[in-house]
Length: 551
Figure 1 (cartoon, one colour):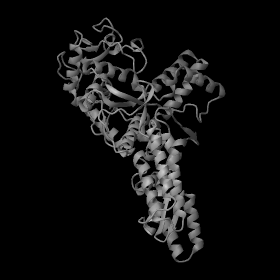
Figure 2 (tube, helix red, strand yellow; figure 1 turned 90 degrees about the horizontal axis):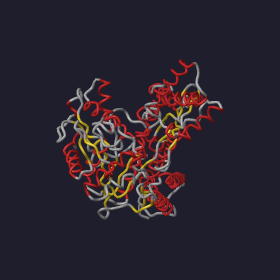
Figure 3 (tube, one colour; figure 1 turned 90 degrees about the vertical axis):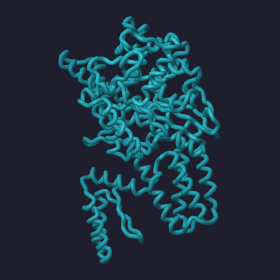
């Protein structure tokens, strides 16, 4: 099977487009760097990293470009609040993003362009749009795209210009802006804005609008009509719609040949919540009317405070307002955990990646949070960590058997099963990157490998086939592809800290037990083992010595 995808533009399943045989050009919209990312921002990074890994494993040459928006109104506002220069703040959060995504096992793209490095190309692109009379400048030095001049506007999102919200923050219709549906390509500098976010242009000093930047960066690194554009579902409209509109009149060709959009990660706002039945029913109705209420938003705290103020001033709330207050209170309480860096302090980053890949990329993914005994728990992610721990443990077992018996030699009956499971894994990914369907062949590979480790004299070729199949799925999924020792060190250190234990304390008990065993004081050794177990420490004895791990 060759790779097929669900194209967001045609809403059809299509073969992977290729401008050049055997090659794929991919552009993915990256972050606007004004703060730490949340786990929802991490989903496209993990999804498209996995796509790149899969296509490269098939022998395809992939050119992968992901940008940074390092010039934006949100960055300027955040810098003003913190007293930093906007470019310095952006640089700080570029590095934070890189560190967070690297922890999830994401490969570095072939190019990571920034808006600030692409100003000449952006200005040239806007000039071309003005020359073709699909864009216009205002007396204030702003430049807008004239949506009415692009008849195909809305072909990606299936929404026409009337669905476009006006950009009232930069010129209302009648103030130099012809229509509320037109969007900004160039924003004239305003008094007091820092010099680091001002560039010269034919229309005066200013900075790019949000949408134009991706068109310029994609064309610079991939050329027109590149193969595939990816990003989150939230970007389909208006950002990706505007990219198409401002690109195709200049190049006379499709902006991208196909589009892939990943779904949202949403807080499971009702799961494990201590709400009464009436409140649950009201919240369900609210979510049906406005599904966006299920997403963590920076506006949640302000909306909660507004409801609290209304309750004080008006002397009470309606049933619907009380339900909203309960909902926003829950979302605000869990917003900190939703930040990726904070989440990875609670569960291993490998578990976060594995959890993301457990669901098809186009489907919504519920972020399950529970409270027990005053503590926050993440049931699905904690289960994912146990699964990743099992994968690493399987590698340890297989390596031990291979070291003892060797891998060089003929294969037995098992090798063909590993080959079939590997084909099933690849077929699942070829079917629109269905990582959810990979769970079964991955489970079969690792379960079969563990059973092989229990065989007294397995065929050396079977051990080799097991290792190769395990390595293939790990390399493509980006999970358990590094030596297990690092994973176990991270997990053990975090679990010890959570339990108020220190490594030296545990090691001391383990050493005492080893000494008791050496002196044949088995009662003392058993008592020490029981004490370690009560602390959540697993002790393993082998001919090579005693090891321990927090479980």
